[in-house]
Length: 199
Image (cartoon, rainbow, N blue to C red; front, side, top):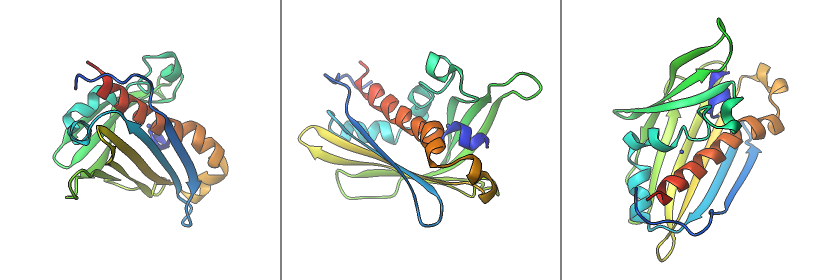
């Protein structure tokens, strides 16, 4: 349930003229997993975007933004993403459970395994999977990918799947997933784009 609450609960000088459009579709796959696919076209060359996408040590600067409880939108979240820590082949999502003692907690982490497979020139992808699947969340996986969209432009795509235990499904239908999880993915993509736009 913590993972569901978090994600599921992200420099370079150029500045975008307008907020890039984000298209996000959320559906249910044949195996019952929820799938969210978000796409954005960014006014930056693929080389710049790829550097930020694969700089896991820098994820802590952008991924928690809008999800860490420091803004009005995320202040009411029960699960708040307060940091990201990179390790060899892993990303730890550091979270806070925003409840009164003894139910609240802070500084716990969920570990994702990461992989950057080789690809053709102009295309980059980062694959991530839940390092220790559980009975409650047997599947959490995704691909953060990048391709050229035109001269000086890049398209990013975040394709994520999450499957919950069968007994949680009546309490977490697709519409609830869109509100509580897919919204977090949208926030992460917008934070990534904003980080690229920062001077």
